[in-house]
Length: 235
Image 1 (spheres, rainbow, N blue to C red):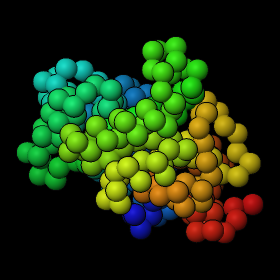
Image 2 (cartoon, rainbow, N blue to C red; image 1 turned 180 degrees about the vertical axis):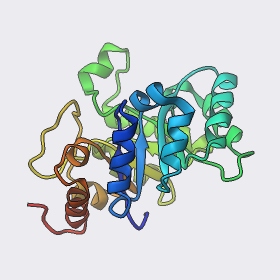
Image 3 (spheres, one colour; image 1 turned 45 degrees about the vertical axis):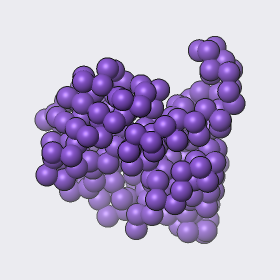
Image 4 (cartoon, one colour; image 1 turned 135 degrees about the vertical axis):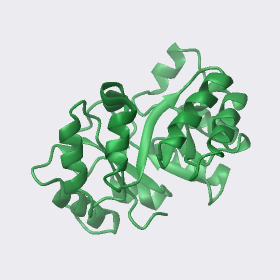
């Protein structure tokens, strides 16, 4: 696991706010995650500006298209210098392989993760889109497909960490959103855990947004989370 497993989600269309938050958290987190809201507003130039701040960047792009299209997008993104990006596992084996292979020409190839089942979805949601399996079964099925495709790991909710770790082994990277400190509001997340619980279950990277970005002192909030991860209390 990373020395600092905490990544802050800077999902904001405000570039200057994102830069300010990245600088204030530079010594308190292990990296930053930039989502579609930020990337749609600022594109490659905004991404480069955050990369230049020096923290590892996880581009949460969730590519899902035909293999050739995803390969082109993955090649372009990896060339910008991101450390991690993701694709939807439901795009299939060929698409995931194309994404991974496309990164290999970059000076420092990015790690490619597969999104399994979004943390906002529950069993009823899966049923409505025609997926009859239990959430955990679907997550493990997609994680095994991602491993077969040669991807570096998956994004899954905290509730499936243990099952993915058991199925895919100790070297498979598990990145986990849906992290909420003790007493925090759930927001639009359904399948959540505390930071300590997630790390104990086997997560490598924890992605945390509002509990840090909405805090009066984001760096202090991050340090409190790290204390909680270590088995202390953030109360």
